[in-house]
Length: 466
Image 1 (cartoon, rainbow, N blue to C red):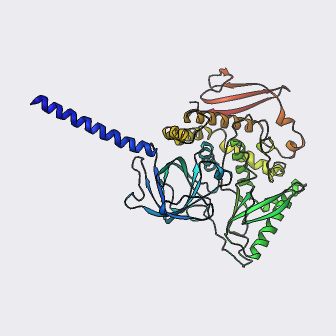
Image 2 (cartoon, rainbow, N blue to C red):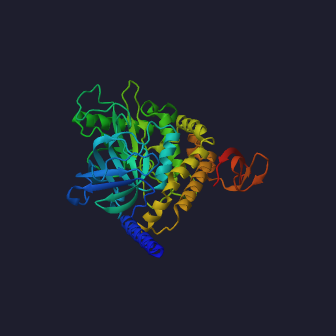
C-alpha cells in the first residue's frame, strides 16, 4: 500500500513537473523574461504596423512586474489605443520604433498620465542623457521606462517606453499656441519647434550664414495660418542674424534665446559627445510672457560616440556630414561661455557620483532582458549589458574630465586652437591621503594634468568606481 502511494505521489510530481515545463516552454516561446514590465499590444484584425503616418486601432494591456506594480488593463479586459511607426533612420532598421496614442490619459509605470507615448529602441545613452538633463535643470525632460513588448503575440524584445515631447500639463507645461492662429498679439508665444536635419512638410527653412540652410520643424501648433508661418520665418531669420553678428560684445541674440538653458544644453551634448546635438532633434520652445525667449529643450534622440575627445563635439569629424547649427558662433560669445562655466560649476564635481549610480540602477536591471534582446535581433556586439554600461560610464567620465579641462572662454578659444590641442604629458590623481596614482581613486581626487608646454591644471574630481 505504501509503495503504491509513493508510486502515485511520484507520478503526480512528474506530471506536475511535466506540465510546469510545458507552461515554461510556452512562456519562453513568447520570449519575455518577466524581469521587466511587459506591454501587450494587439492591432485590429492583427494588422501589421507599416505606416509612420496612419494610426491603426488596437488594444493594449500592461503587466507591471515590479514590487507594488500597477497593471493597466488585462488580457480579458484590454484598453484601447492607436499605433503607428515613427523615426527616420531608425524606422529603416529591422527592429522598428513606434508611436502609441491611448484612448484615455493614463499614468504608465510611474510616469504622469498622458495619451501620447513612444516605444524607442533600447539605448543606454538615452537613459543616461535624459537623467543628465534633469540634473542640469532643463525645463522638462522626458522620462523613460524599460519594457518588454509583444505586438500581435510576437515578441519584439526590449524597448524604452518614453514620454514624448509635447506641450501639456504633465509634459512641457507652457502656453500652447492655437492652430491656424491669426491674432498678432498671441502668435509670438507657445511654440515647440525642432532644428531638423530631415525635410518635413511641417517646416520652414532659412538661410544660415553663407554655408547652409536651417530647417525648423514646428511641432506645436500643428497647423499654421499664413500669418503664423510668416512670423515664424521672420523670427528665426532675426535669431540667426543676431547669432552671426560679428560684434559678439554687442550682439542681441540673448534677447531672443535663453542663454542659461542653451549653455546647459551645450554641456549635455558635450558630456555625451552626441554628434547629433545641434543638427537634429534640437528642440526649442517659447512660453507666453512679455520677455519670453526661445529655450533649448526638451532633449531627444541622444547618443554617445564613446571615442577619445580632442575637441568640442561639433568640431570633431564623424563618419557622416552634419551641420552644427549656431553653436560654432555661440562659443565665441563670452556671455554664453560664462553661462556654461556657471552651469558646469553646479554639476562638476558634486553630481557626478549620483549620475553614475543612477545609470547603474536604471540600466543593470535590464540585464536578463538584454540577453534575450541580443539573441532576438542578432547583435554583433556580444558584450553583456554590465560590460556595455561600464564602457559607457568610462566614456562619460573621460568626456567630463576633458570638458572640465577645456571650458569655453569666448573669442579667445575661437582665435586660437592651441588651448584645445595642448598635448597631455601626464595625468595623476591624488587622494585625501596624498597618495598619487595614474588612475582615479574612489571618492575625492585632486586631478593634476601636465601639458607639453609644462603648464599644469588642477581640478577636483569625485569618482564612484565599480
